[in-house]
Image 1 (cartoon, rainbow, N blue to C red):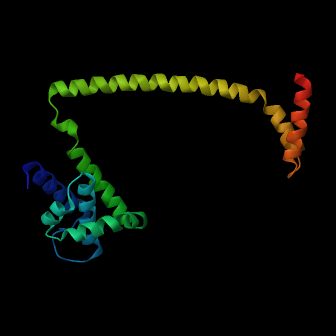
Image 2 (tube, rainbow, N blue to C red):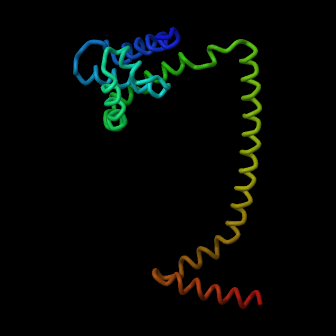
Image 3 (tube, rainbow, N blue to C red):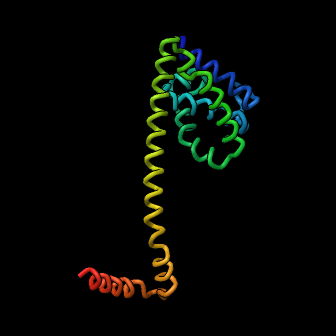
Length: 175
């Protein structure tokens, strides 16, 4: 096992042990142990590690990891305890293996500069959308009283008839 991979596996193993308060290597089928193993394998699979390498580390068959992957989504939707613990472990893990921690000073400065440019661009985009929204709201509010009148006076089921009559009316106004 590569050094970086071994380091990530060991770190995640420690995080899972602390968060789930179990040693996932203990061969028990109690739900908390299975949840810990499923969370461990799910995080590593999502990081791109092979199911075989995860299985070797856990002392399991790769088919077990495949089974965990198939079941995980349905379990996390229904099991609040698993969802909370998994999210907590995932947050700890992501904070530990964030690529920012491995960057040198120049790379960090470049990254911050790039992010500042992106933030500035996003602020401009937000302002543009705010202006468009304001214009749209002004245009829509101009018609509010007409829409309210038509809505109040149109019986249910008569919308098509009212639409046809309004169209005829507007055709006469414009010609």
